[in-house]
Structures are given as C-alpha cells and as structure tokens.
Length: 190
Image 1 (tube, rainbow, N blue to C red):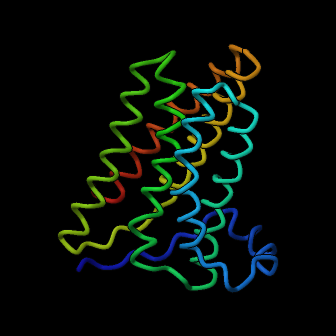
Image 2 (image 1 turned 180 degrees about the horizontal axis):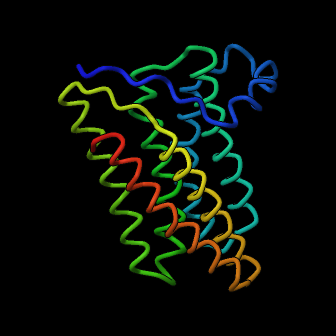
Image 3 (image 1 turned 90 degrees about the vertical axis):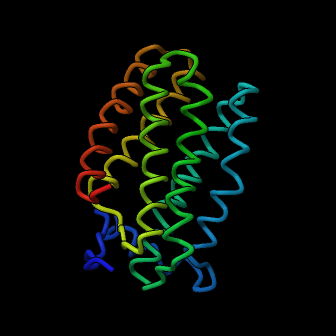
C-alpha cells in the first residue's frame, strides 16, 4: 500500500459541523450515499418529462447529501471501504444524469469530455483499488464536484426558464470543472 494521504477536509466542513447535531447519530454517511444512488435515476424521468422545478429540488437535496455524507464521514470518523467506492460513483451518477440528459442536447463535445473524465475517474479508482492503492479525495476534486453541481443546477434552471445566459454560464462552469478534474487526476496519479 502507498502512504496514505491525510484526510482532506472540505471548506464547508467547518460550517456543516455546526449542523451535525441536527443529524441523528443513527444516520450514517453510507445511508446518504445510498439515497443518492437510489434517487439520482429519478432525475432522468423528471428531466425528460420537462419537470424542471421538481428535478432542481431533487438535485439540490441530492447535492446536499453529497456534502453531508463526506462531512459526516470525516468529522464522525465513519469513513468506510463501501463509502470510498460508492460515494464517488453516486457523485458521477448524479452529475452524469444531468449532463447526459440536458447538455447532450446543446453541446455534444462538452458532454463527451465530461462523461469521459467521469469514466476515467471511475476506472482509475477501480484500477487503484485492484492494486491496493489508497486514493483519497483531494481539494481539486472537491472544487470540480462543486463546479459541476453549480453547472448542472444552472443548466436545469436555464432549461426551465429558457434563459440562454444561464445555459452559457452552466457550460462555462462545466468546462472549468474539466481543468480541476485534470488537476485532481494529476494529484492522485490516476
């Protein structure tokens, strides 16, 4: 095994730690990841059916579970092997669904780029696990995920309100996330 990297605390961990007493001890980080895995596919139905308001609300809730599960795991010392595998997959599923459903309609190149990077992350993580190399999240990956969440949110909002500027802003954020994805991969050695 390679030397373990120190746990990277997200900037919002400092803020969310004050909300942790509101989360019952019985709620584990893996529960939140599982919720994201189960409910993310519902976004496809909502987006294809042009139910953007419900899709945005669900997306925001699921994005919050992403922030919370990581914070819970780090601050309550509940990092698990299951979470290390499934949390990144749940993240990629959440973003991938919005990208593949909406962005595909307006920007094929960006869609292919984003999905290729997400697939590379999944395959790189699987390869690292097979070689028993511990790969932990880093600050670049956290920035990438936040940019993707905001980009996906603006994309849905732009489609819902038919505002081209929001769709353009979403694309800028998603393109920028590719740069941070590259930095994250270089840092992880994937």
